[in-house]
Image (cartoon, rainbow, N blue to C red; front, top):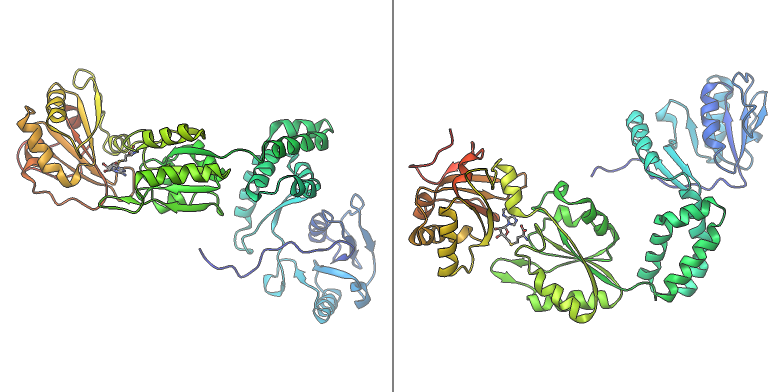
Length: 464
Ligand code: SAH
């Protein structure tokens, strides 16, 4: 991220003056902005040309005098000439921040594009570089926000003291505020003029529920690209107090969580286990037991080779609420990456997601038969033992000529593809890229687009 040359802040003008030197359209534009505040807005110019009559301002039609800046918080200069010069000098002499319209070099401050839902303000600034972009962003944010959001922010402000008295836990208090500002019922009540009563009622409920019980969301993060996360996953990541994530979930996805959420990596990288499964179970039960909302973020889909079964059992046993959010499993991302229809009319009547790791002879016998009959196998956790698994499948009756396709880092920008035959894979000559992999086996693989794939065998299967 680049560094800013300006510091965005909200500057107090209440009880002070904002002086605008100029009487034309540019002065009028700045006046519209200035009158959004409670400051006393004073227009000074020898030539009042624009129509200021609709605005709550004091218009003084004469030459500028330095005394005009008594009690002034901000000065805008929106004309040229002697008065403008005098105003600039006077502002600088008194150390009053100055904005000279359309002359960035002479400005102490710029006015951002503003969304006004007082007391909520959103200011968008491009430091003068791209005002058009700033306006576009503003329009989008404007569309997202209810016009009543300012009133609701005001409700939150008025209940602040009470909320502190009634809910002591900071996380629980934040949940109350989140409920307050997102609840359609509160918005409706506000519209009827019953906002205060409804908000107070909500506060009482939250206080009675001891600020709300903890919960664990088992969330599928998808294969590792931010835009393959579901909207629900994204929303819950924004609500979580703690994010407990696996090593396979990339940093960029973990970063999408609420900024001040605690993050705990339980890094179950292959080969080193920083947390045992039992420790993870204990951890999520403990965190939720403290009333926290825990996002348990797993790669792909949580229900597929994600040890979700054990975590759910632990949560049930402890009486903790949970919810499961599906994700795009690696095999589906791999199918998409390679345009491989894993089920295909007249070729493949089914699709098996299976683990290569720990597969025994009876598993392999079974899968060899399924692959032989046309079903597509998607093998997880098999990259480092792919040659062994391929030769065992052949040993159990799968044809060495069956197409195979392998996707390393499926769904990610750095994906790498390999294609060939089961016999070729059994040769064990492939030097795979780093990263997790899906191995597809089956006739339907030949229908995919493996165009750029490295070949795992010189003989046999090749895409036209
Ligand atoms: N729950 C996950 C699977 C976790 S098990 C899911 O539904 O995808 C870990 C295995 O998933 C890895 O060994 C690998 O086989 C597979 N995997 C996970 N992410 C992957 C990715 N981006 N590309 C290819 N395979 C991946």
